[in-house]
Image (cartoon, rainbow, N blue to C red; front, side, top):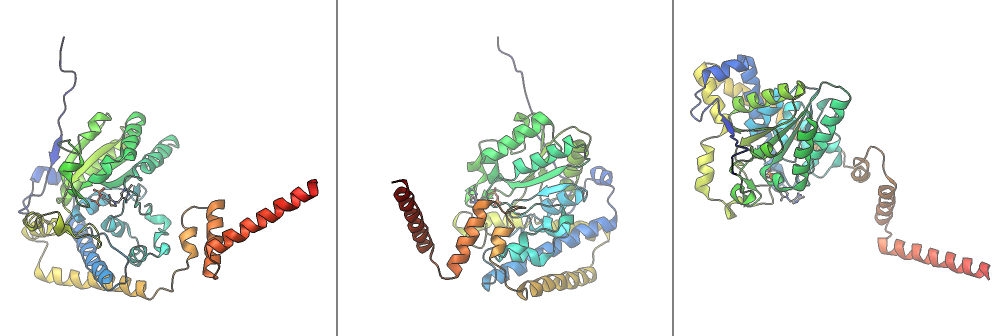
Length: 384
Ligand SMILES: Cc1ncc(C[n+]2csc(CCOP(=O)(O)OP(=O)(O)O)c2C)c(N)n1
């Protein structure tokens, strides 16, 4: 006998199209006031201006490298604004707009990309974890946090950001499986920006969508237009409400595009066509929201001018603060890794101090070996 025992479908959500036209009934459901929309727009512009400043600083040699989030502002700001302050967020490394929207001091973001560990000392009230460079390492942490919250009967959810590339990591699948089985209040938020450095989405996975991966783990996966801030906002709000009702996780695939290079160390023109980039520029999330606001009568040239002045001032203050900070202490690299420094890190710190004082590690090791052999000799002699 043969019969179909499972079928599935994946929903796609768009509320605001590329021309700035809205699906009225879906939009009205959101209950967003004009001020809420202006707030969204302001955060997107602020993120974009910060991005421009960071790229300029990197070119001047004042930042080590930088991972631009240009093009992904709607995905990040739409999702983070749908959460409550107490919901805890786990970023990957491209979540600058999300950090900004949560109120992270912007000079600290520059410190991080400038190699200064003080930038990783995220203020407690931001409720956001530190940057995760190892791809896919943060979903298990987000699931663990959410599970702990559930066991402690705390009414909070977590949201974890990751890219399409991270979905090929084992950690992602372990986290998804665990979340499905234990119904943890975790929102998996994949920014499918079409590339993992030079690897295209088609080469990343044979699945038609990333959203459908949730089905294998027993929960809902949805694809949203990641350049539509309202669709992202709705999908995240729905996922949050579901999580808080005890109905478990959701995977949201935000279908978007990275407009810049992977990082400043990359040259995207080596693996993607300029025509493709130009096509995606037409879908720019900021331009789209502006078109909508203009049609609604809540945007004007005058308003934009005032906004730009306000935002540029904020970015300049952050840059000035960053460049005038006292130099970082090398001990910070060791200090900000664990709440309490473990013995092996203490040893490394001491060794590093020694190097700075002019003792080469080899010399230190040789001295240690000499000390040990003298001790053994002494023991052997005393045994005789
Ligand atoms: C475990 C691991 N492998 C490889 C890398 C090198 N690396 C850094 S970013 C990246 C691509 C990540 O792509 P994706 O998850 O789609 O995120 P995106 O960069 O597109 O935001 C890779 C392979 C790394 N940081 N960690």
